[in-house]
Length: 131
Image (tube, rainbow, N blue to C red; front, top):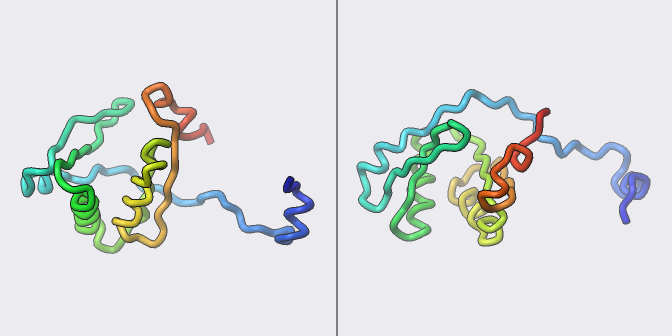
């Protein structure tokens, strides 16, 4: 069992914080219209969570091609780079989908979060806190 005193004796009293401190800019959805017009394999589908309409695409081709198309879309939108924040359900996480997406995006400082899978768990308390 690792208590506070054991941790301090091994690592010292001043471990760096693991809290994320990042200023988040207002969200602007990525325009996916160009992508859907260029490919017969990519289809835009309606998707809304809590009144927020999100750009959702389904890809009817190879998995690797879908990841590459998404990476190209994001690279075109943010040519100077970006911080990807990927959140996947436990099922998708166990299949490695979240890590695959981070790897495909090729950014150094990506974050991967896992949440409970299924409709039952689509609640505020599973995605964030009031802080």
